[in-house]
Length: 100
Image 1 (cartoon, rainbow, N blue to C red):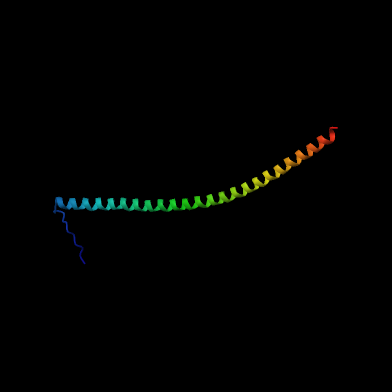
Image 2 (tube, rainbow, N blue to C red):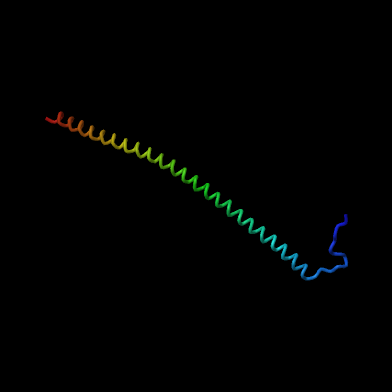
């Protein structure tokens, strides 16, 4: 089977053939850039979604931790209020007993 060679050594390329070759090469490179931009856009979009999910999960965890800490703080404040009242009562009792 013979291979078909359209250009012989003595055959000169016409301007149209150069232009067609340039356009095909330009189109291939241009479409390569477009494909890369589309791929990069999809990767960034997926990364943004993952970061948003991660941020939401961390925020939910931090909110639960803050709620627990706030509850403990309120409990401690109430205990300190009872302790203050107790010491005021004890101090006033001691003052009444010590003073004639």
